[in-house]
View (spheres, rainbow, N blue to C red):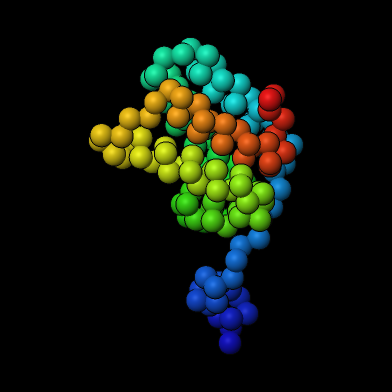
Length: 136
């Protein structure tokens, strides 16, 4: 009985869907600032800088998700934040995160500059859906 009253019943906690919060103004400002750095990397134009931009965008998304959702991994936080995004944006974020993972973990995966820019656009739409002020 005490365990249930004081949060010790982990099995019932797993079955519930986590609620999604909202970004605080500080977090939105941090995202806007970091996105500026990501855009500078893209402007550099080199394939390595653009790949670094994808890594930075994925890391920034993980930061944002940690502010609004629960979960031990980015994948869990993204799953738990489903309600924070329009469906197409949510799917785009999954696609972008998968591309980042493939870039990092698959030896023969080559993320072209064009594809990297598409991935960055998906991250950007996600940040904008969370209320970050990013230029179009």
